[in-house]
Image 1 (cartoon, each protein chain N blue to C red):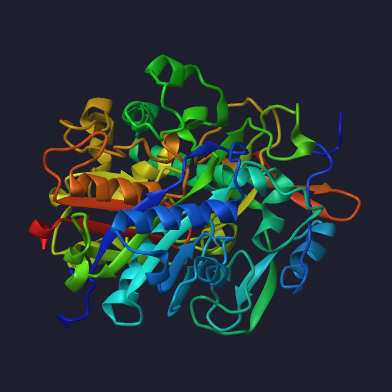
Image 2 (cartoon, one colour; image 1 turned 45 degrees about the vertical axis):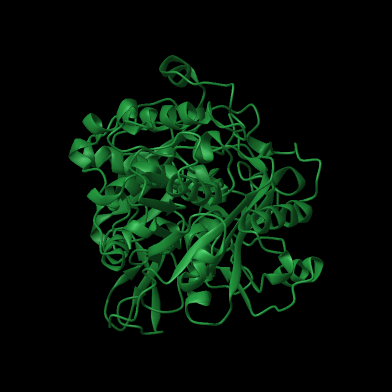
Amino acid sequence: MSDRTLRGKAAIVGIGQTTYYKHGGSPDSEFKLALMAVVNACKDAGISPHDVDGFASYGNDRSDAPRLASALGCKEFRFSNMFWGGGGGGVCGAVANAAAAVATGMADCVVAFRSLAQGQFARYGRGTGAPLAAGDDQFLFPYGMMSPAQRFAMKVTRFMHEHGIRQEALRAISLACYHHAQNNPNAVMRGRPLDAAKYDNSRWIIEPFFHLFDCCQENDGAAAVIVVAADCAKDFPNKPAYMLGAVQGCDHRSAAPVHNMSGYPSSHFRALAPHLYNMAKLGPADMQVVQCYENFTGGVLMSLVEHGLVKPDEANEFLVTENLLAPDGRMPLNTSGGNLAECYMHGLELVIESVHQIRGDAVNQLKRNDTAIVIGGPMVTPVSSIILGSEAAL
Amino acid sequence: MSDFYLPEGLPAPSSAPDGLAQPYWDGTKQRKLMVQKCRGCGAWQWGPEWICHRCHSFDLDWQEIEGRGRIYSYQRPHHPVHAALNGHGPYIVVLVELPQYGNIRMVGNLLGDPRQEVKIGAPVEAVFEPHAEFTLVQWRVS
């Protein structure tokens, strides 16, 4: 049994991203953005793109892996993998799939990436305009329920109701993200700080819990990480960030149609999180920084609860901004600004920020930086999360 | 006053391509609320699927149920997610739980003032909203 783990078997040794833009702001095509992110990640790892031999992505990424491998002239192409599901539920899953490939010898150097130029394709905040709705949508769209925000608002309303959690807990999450972004040169929301009054006065997207600032941005950009087997991780110039634990999947019947999953008010991590900690041989109290995907702040709240990082009956007291800030907060959260304020790169920016923290070169650097948890795409299905760590955490 | 809760022009429901949900839409046209019930184990199932999630029987019946439930969750969207909703203003979507049918849940609009206070747990009843090609099921506080 002891061999059946990713713990300590793989590491991220290169990180790359493009400039992040507001949706529609990129001068470059989506596929070119993907190429730029991969090239930047290779540069960071001190390797040639010719040496990449696999690609893993998620969210129905349009940048086709065989085309990437051909455009980059990869000498070998031994692994290609796409994580099911839309949005960012697969962000950590893609990194874990890359890790599984290198840990098992299927490939040696796998890129996990996401490229997303929403300005060049469909946006998320609006229906497609198709005249007919089929599948699950036939029971939702005719009632004016068709955006991801709406899909998830039902869960958040119910969760807040069941646990008596107030809007201020969600506000603290948003304020922390915006605060961290102000130090981040690549954050789209740098120079646009947020305070409580601005949050409270922002327009409703959906009552009762989705203000404008509870919702992620829509952006253009790309990001990539280079994953290699742990036994060669020290051959690269930067300090490796080792895979300590990984899970992907969802809770019981989380895709049951018309909002009929059991345990409904959930980010879908309840059954997964214990497996994550078991693999990592660590617990929630060992997590020194938390990077949690904000599609919407309510999803962050439920993810934190389901990963044992916050107790639901303590959420009102614990989720105050100062507890969530680097470097001295009790649980620094989304220390580069996250999806809300750095860039909605479907969470891959959260993985990259975790690597920065472990290396010790983050824009809001923590003093304790041996472990980081990354939580991907709450409330979508399937979801994924990983724990990364320094050599000291192995 | 329109006969419809929301403006016309939203996507119309379609059971294509596999027809799985057609008995539901045939039912609403006759003002009947039909959901799946497993002939194998008696489980209620909504939305429709080809197999019973509990006993794996493919022998799923459609049964008429009473359109009564309670509000399990809700939302009041303000942001228009479709061109037909531009300038329309807020409206209410409810997730209704039907305790007498295995706690299956259904989605619809809550009729009445779109700015009314919505109480989770409030009893609601189904109201049929006929359109030219299909009939929707809405809910009002009972």
